[in-house]
Image 1 (cartoon, rainbow, N blue to C red):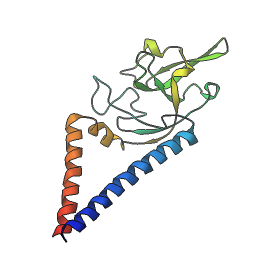
Image 2 (cartoon, rainbow, N blue to C red):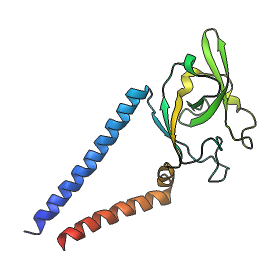
Image 3 (cartoon, rainbow, N blue to C red):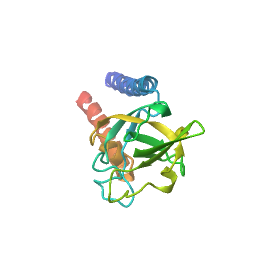
Image 4 (spheres, one colour):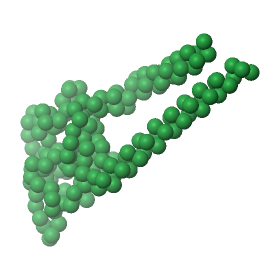
Length: 181
């Protein structure tokens, strides 16, 4: 019976830590969303299909694994040269990080043309990136943390997910085995 009490205490402590971590993340996310005026204040630069692991459409300015912080701005504050994140008009679930190369105002509405900085992969804008409406814009990039997002990129793969879960299980098992010895 005596051995059971520390286990319950450890389980409660672990559950409390997990819960506090989740709550802290949501508080941080919603605080950043409110402060930066966008629903997506943090975006990871991912891998582009068909490109090497260390290259994306925005290389050399941005690299896969970079974490970007965004601010929501009115369309009239976006300038040519700004790096923005937009929802792909072809697939709204896909986010694109590109540079604004042209702004057209038609009937009082702003329309943007963007393209990537990588001259090898983006010699011109993609068809759906030409004169898209401001409603597709998620935010303007204001800050970048280089390469810190690789943990997220790897964790999204099946092998990465398995390794991450395995590491968590090993840490939990070590925690319990250290306390019972």
